[in-house]
Image (cartoon, rainbow, N blue to C red):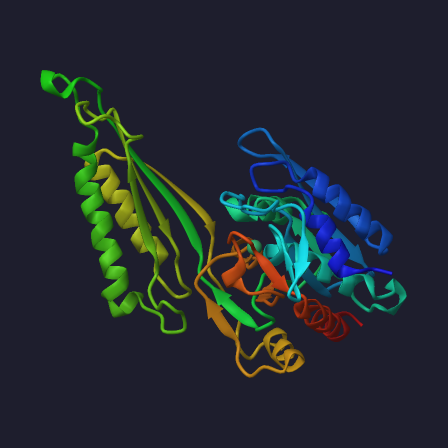
Length: 371
Ligand SMILES: [Zn+2]
């Protein structure tokens, strides 16, 4: 008998913060998939720090199309916890622990729903996908997207990102672009006049970054009322590594996290950034993590999910998920147990009532798209 709360408890016991290897928690998930009758593909890679990361793609059933349930097995760090974040605790009808809400509880509900079907009853396959490194840039999803043999030529059209939405249907989220500009100078005691202050070249670039920031919040061409907030974030970070007051900065770094919205002319803004960098001698790297995704409110996927959850309207959210990557491959919604306001918090928890709601909804979605 599959007990989703017990499985959540066991998942929480693995410390799979993104800096660690998620191989142990993936071994556990792979074992669960095996027992529940899934064929499993394991896609591994080394992250930038040489740490082994593991993605799993499970498939049950044969044929084209079907439905994917997608989740990640890494969590955010655990600074500030007074209790052991990896020992789940149940009280007040809640399960507490790192990942209870984002999103190990959801992984257990995905397994429970997918595991409850016999392969022989399926006209199209169920896929369960567990990725690494969602919290730090969706690197695992990118590996799955590029390398999965089970997903290649699968004809898969529909996916559910099972991130916490309190089982409300979300049909769109913003994209993510990371930028990093750097200028170099020469460190010297500032009294000598012999240094080169790297910030001086950076300042005109920063002023252009601020201009774009302000325009994104005021120019109607950039706004989109479907989202709250209706503007794109252009979050500027500045640092020189904390150089002393009396030293010239040998380097100056500006980071920008841009969250594009559907319909926005991203390239125009990125071009402006490239030109500003060139004018100021800023060495710029732009890393597109993913585009925004937006699924038609009248699509089969959205309408079915609204009917099954007994809700009226699909929402949009301002943050990103693995949907940044998987949105290129399939139509997506976000639909999952737990409340996003609990994600990434100290003393993270999820209501126990959310488990059955999620399992029943996922089963009904599978019946519609796979049986
Ligand atoms: Zn998450």
